[in-house]
Image 1: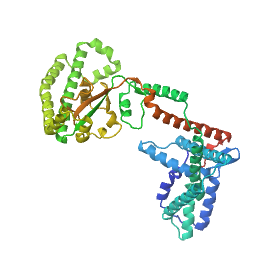
Image 2: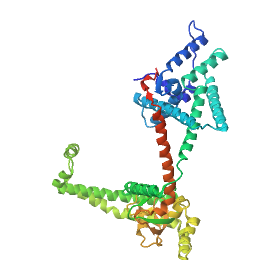
Image 3: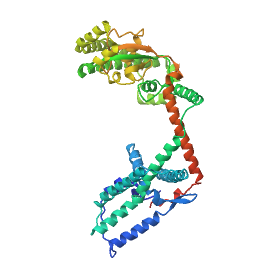
Image 4: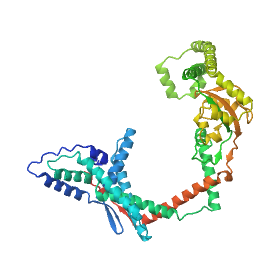
Length: 475
């Protein structure tokens, strides 16, 4: 296990440290700092990678190592995971490979006769200087020392340990700018998608979507509410609907939800009791259906109930159903009555032939009906939908014909819906012509990206890199 991982908590933590500047008996603080810096430089001189024509030293990647470690440790901490030695090794591998990649990019730019524009080069230099000054000024406020010179040297030492030198920050900015330049240049070599390539991409997209959406109703429905997702295959049984949502006061709407929940809980309880009764009346079937170990544990924890006891509970629960149903009906009636004038006004305009989309605009309170793509598309609903309230789904599927509107409003946990059946959805592959533009752009971007990555891998391979991750000295 590696020690002293505190060195890898990143600049943000380094800057938070209040350095005590302990008194060194018989040693001049400036001399001691010089010795400490020399020791650190020796430690950071470890060769962590070699390539044809050069080396990567630990010093070259300490800033990136600290930054990535800090980010990843905070990310893992959100999930209650502590960074392990193997995780640290993975980070070391990443930053060293990235450093070799930066060399490959710089060499490729040189071989192509490409360089940053004067304006971009100046931006790189200025940004690096500003970043160093910010880090320097921040840590200078934390360090101690009897003289300004001592504090300056101590700040320089702490920044070096964190990998924050002027050269390191400049190289980070330079590598980023060079990467952007070569990426833009190489991706620009791919300018079009042939018909054959587009057809192949289409067939792949259709197959992938069929795999993704065949039994994943929620994923499909979410995709159809996204303006950035193109769907190439449609499941069976879907229709589109639009609705006018009227939201009553929260109290009356919550009363409906509560009453419905109470009724559902009672019905579920009765169903469980009937299953229990069936198990008592048919013990052989029950034993076959249960795991033997679970059955033995159940027998040890509680004595089995008789059929008469279970039936009595069923009768008592069923006796209360009428009251619960009445409570639901009353809550629903009160909910509708609270906005009846508005509902009557909307239905009157529907009967008068006013445009449903215009009524959504005027009365609807669902943002999904105001924003694209659902403003135009509507919602995709089927009997097995999982993204919508069950009452909304039932109301949408109860409409018999395209163009039908709910004769009575539908109450869900979101509010009161007046639903219109917009269209049937043709199952299977979406016609290529319907998705051609989006597919072309996506395919072109993918081809550009793949082309660049293939080229980048070849440039790196040409360097014949050898990695020495075990050479890292972080003690």
